Image (cartoon, rainbow, N blue to C red):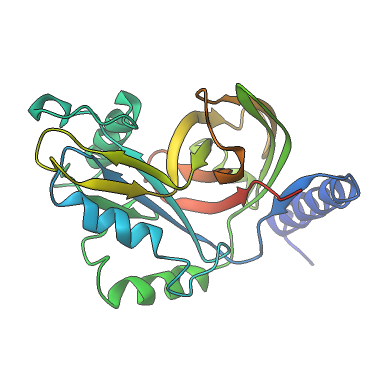
Length: 265
């Protein structure tokens, strides 16, 4: 006889499958996460940091190295705490600096620096060697603890309109789980005129331009949201995408992640 927990998990899975089978019939730019866990890669970076360009280039190269979007979800979060040394990073947001510090406070010792890579919410210093691929393989081997679906319904001059659905495999995780939604942009560049990178042209991909979260699950294991993510004037719609992930706010564990580039046409 199946346990109550097992039956609840099956019910959640069936409900999710039914919802997105219906959703899949709609014409949309959409994506749904798979049965295995995708690795969330957060790069905390700054144009005011002379050791950051190498990490920016590494993040941009991940798909060129052979990784797939169902394996890694890369995001570049530009922090603002180096702006004072001579160059104001045009992509930096104070909320990214706050997030970096909050995640650091969950660990001991507390470490905040740039460039910093967080892999599944954990400080990961060996991103430039073979250890990264090994860790991603290990993460990808785990069954996903959440399911996510994303759809881009429209891109207006001032916002990208997205729909998000998320469901926890184990409803017992809803107390500490939260969803985060981001709009990112590729093919960004700056000609840096001051600071540690003065005279350099810096290029970036997967730069988070707008961030929403944490969004709690409330009373149940399923969450659905419709959000407009603001865009800056002059944004090239072809270079945009949205990403979402489910994270345990107490441990920083990432239960699942998903990215959706803007569809062509």
